[in-house]
Amino acid sequence: MGLATLLGGFLSISHAAKAQGGYADDALLYMRQNPSGTARTLGLAGSSSSLGADFGNLTSNPAGLGFFTKSEFTITPGVGYGTAKSTQVANAAAVGTDFSAQSQTANSFHIASIGLVFANRRPDNDNGSDWRGGAFALGFTRLADFNQSFGYRNSTDNSHSFFRRLSEPYGYTNVNSNEYQQATDDIASQQSANQYTNIDGLAYGTGLTDQTQGRNPTTGAPTGIFQVVTQPRSGTITQDELVKTTGSVSQFDLGYGGNYRDRLYIGGGIGVVFLNRTRTSTFSESSSGAQDFQSVDYLKTTGVGFNARIGLIYRVVDAVRLGASIQTPTYIELTDEYNTTLAAKPAYVASQQGAVSPLTTTPGTFDYSITTPFRATGGATVLIGKYGFLTGDIEYVGYSSAKFNTRDGSVDSGLDNANVSITNGYKNVINLRGGAEARLDIFRVRVGYAYYADPYVNSSYGRAQNYFTGGLGIRTKTFFVDLAGVYLDTKDQYQPYSLASVASPVVNITNNRFTTSLTGGFIF
Image (tube, rainbow, N blue to C red; front, top):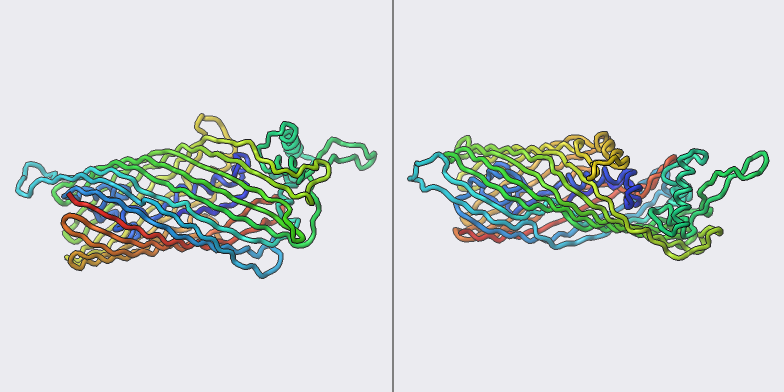
């Protein structure tokens, strides 16, 4: 699964807040894909760019479709089991040294792939053309899995808490600056109109924050300078958050692979991408053993896009195949739907407002697009007679070249800032995949491993993804059944909010996910 670093996650709901870092993190989610395809391909850790004769070639290297000599139908249901363990990082925002891990699980049922392959081949005695045949394929493949749940409990103090974040409206700390005063005006206007657009407005509307007017230190007269203030708290502040995410990136493909003299295989395909991701986080802070407030953030992102790919496989000798494919950048049009609900507890409501009822932002939407980078893959397969084969892939992904845009051509500072973060924060990487299959009459045994490199330029916390895979299969002249298991081991970090001048709480997350898939296929 493709989990981003999630910096600024708690504030990445409204468009204005998401501009602080959430878009760049989301870009990585949409770029980073997990091994996909049929259970045969999954059992080999996704390494199939030079293999051929598998429906999974449609999304990896369509030249492999040229190996088909008969038509087939396949369907691959799957079940995923995920566990996330979260532990507070011992930085300046942490209180104490003993931080216990919190665990959450997230399970899902899905269709990994479903497809049809229509093959034709000239009889061996038909020498009317050097093109010996080919296959047309169409179908659906699940490329990325967003199903995850994680929770944590942090210990901090008031100067590093979310109250501190609320006293820095929109990230500004200089009370005398025009930006700070414009922020206080916007927050107050939300309360006056009873239409809230962000967490700062909700905090003021519920009375969790107040705005005090500054005075001239000489005369004592009001100066018209307003400052956002919160109730003072002392001692240890406890933070709890539960984040649940569901959804996936899926792709519907059409492709064709041709066979030239049983030596060179050439193919191409186009894909229509469907993205669906829903994220809900429940965050609270408590002091003196009582909860001070609770916020529930909701974000749903949907999108449709397209890409294309071409590839070739060359049979050097009967036992050695070399393959290569290129996928164009993927263009996806996205829509965010979001809202936030805040409930402030009476003991920490500022006296001027006096309100304690929960408030919710006006539901918001934002339309934009992303262009993810092209992918280039090369691979080799060595056949070991009738006993099986070894296969491997090398994949290049240019994460730093992803780019957001508005859909109407307008300028948006949030997306522009995200593009700068992507260019400066992500790097181009090489991913590795390898697998082996043993053949015992009609039976198949498979193992595989994939390494997806850490995409961050400066990373003191390793966030590479490691996939360990295995599988079994039975293949006859009329049907086949394959079973695969994929185990993901990876790490990440989460920062619920950002503070302008002091450290924010940070959580380390260890993610483990096991997915099992079963492919049933009929040959006709």
